[in-house]
Image (cartoon, rainbow, N blue to C red; front, side, top):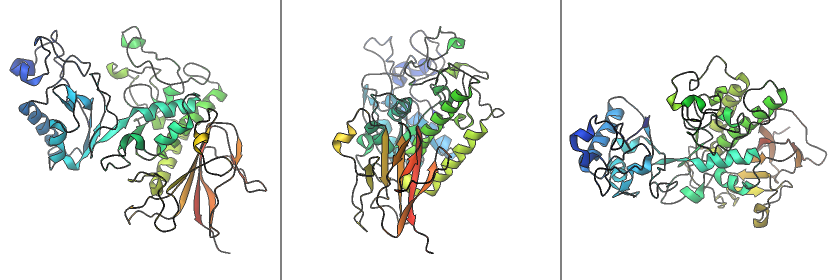
Length: 430
């Protein structure tokens, strides 16, 4: 459940007195040196003061109520950096973080932080303590830009995101699922609008199109908004599939915005919270059946392959059984990447040979390997990694369903703008 404990509806000094302001204004809110005015780390007029023991107790009692009485199984904390502020400064071990981690009821449920607010030092992606998971907006932005074709978003950056953003999260014993990877959320464009609109269209919100985020990293693929052009429709469908495949094949915890699996659109409105009409509704009747089937297929593939959802970060550590690294980066010719390769501005191909990490629980089957390919470039023939004699690679998942046999040298064709997965398995005996 999405919960907002960072501010109240009473707003700033010009807002109404509804409850807490009239009860004990100085205790419930963070005030400026001139106590007439409020600190506004949330952007909504005021900031709740979780330094105060009774305000903290109110929040904790509220959370326990939702778990014990209403049976909610977890929370997403809106603007969680505000909740972590002590004397106005973010502190990962502050009163709220400490209280929730030691609470015998709350430390057993899902805890997801939106790791920022608009106050000083508010952007804290990767700074939260375990067991918090965190929304990863860098994942969203860089995956959108990669598939849009932005030259400055190199394959190296997306490769980091595909392995769970270890540069942000691999510390203090945190698990590789700490990063909540997403392509769209309730704020901003839907996935369909990300490939259908270059600009936001928020005029129905009544703020002269000034509201909402301006950096959507979107692309209309040739026409702004709906179109009957079959070629543009195909391009949009392919890019949505590429982005979703990237999401489901990345280490971390994937999050899909409700309605994205159906091709839901908000008509280019990226701030539709204020609309109580069809703009923000999920239209089940007009579902994109092809994309829905693709979503079901790719989710099933992730569930069947534990290699894609590991709790241990992959750092090319050698496997205890055969000395094989848990991850290798490959080029088109099947050889391993070098440091210089990663810095090539023309690198549009990511090849990840992946295995289970050491220390994985015995109940997770760890045999075999996957070879993930993200091809932002043109059609290309690739060489698969070498495999032991008793094993062979087979194409297990392909965004493009067109079947193409290997050439005489055993090379595999990877189509332009697509994601492919090969699986290493034991050869069938004659």
